[in-house]
Length: 206
Image (cartoon, rainbow, N blue to C red):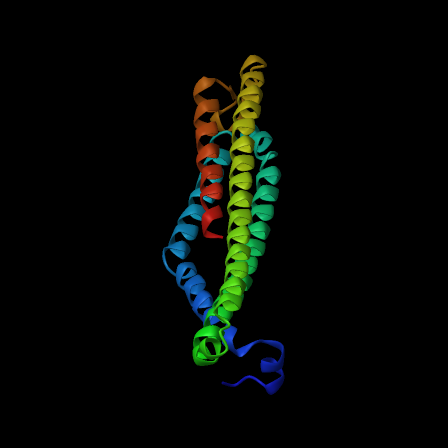
């Protein structure tokens, strides 16, 4: 109601109700459990990393060198989700606008026998909405697959580094110079994995 006249010249009035409804649904899903889950995931991430740095700092620091890869994937994931959300919002707005426009002028449509034309128009927008939805799902699946691949690669990388630390008997200064052994490596690695899993768990709530 507070928009200038120019706003209604750019945006079609019949699309506004569908757009408002979609925005409300997006806001509702964002301020519900997602905030709590996001805080929990980030807290888990920092707790695991801090514990690993306190228990086996050198080994943890070498493993954390892999963290920028995960952060880059998280950033790309967030951008793709934002892009997909905006695309879905746009097509839903258009589809809702067509339905709203047709129902508002139903008498005119029926009077001039334009039912077939309106149905074809609605079908075209429905197919476009379906295509955008499939693209968003495919993008989500691709990013999840990439994230799982990066996790398995981290397992390989960290276990290789841990075996080198044990074989070379590299001292752990936190434990009075005691060389790294299986217990220290595994305990540090589990803490790091817990932290990284927390980072990954934050993805659906971005």
